[in-house]
Image (tube, rainbow, N blue to C red):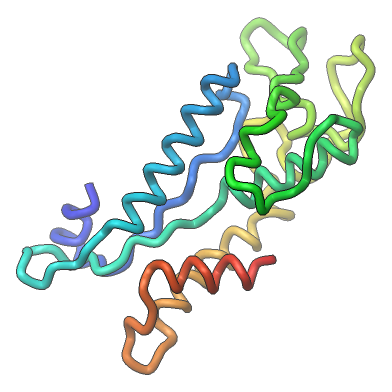
Length: 188
């Protein structure tokens, strides 16, 4: 709970990452559930109000839009591979439109292995008889992100969020909405 982190550790700024697509998402309903959770995260951050009278130190809750970033990578790769996807990321709810391609998987890999999404792990679309592909640099297995290619961006987004809050003359220079706008503009 956010209040406890502030109370017991003295944290003033909390960053919550949005949930990303992974091989744990088995159905489009699962994917819609992930999107609902991400919207709840955004609403928590937008509605958080610091109260100096409470015994809580958390002043701001920021959202690291990891899902938005990684989804754009997966969608762009899928388009490159020939899947029918739209790349207009400015449309609200774009990551729920034509999302069935996410469920294109290597089903015959193993009965114990959760097969990855082909557009998430492959650089080229394999034929239907293949159980492997030429890997891309987004995800090695559908459950993890490629650290050499995505790790620096992950770290930079955290630094950017914290910089928006703490690099001002008076410490807390910006509010949550201003921080969202600045970060979103700077990472495009």
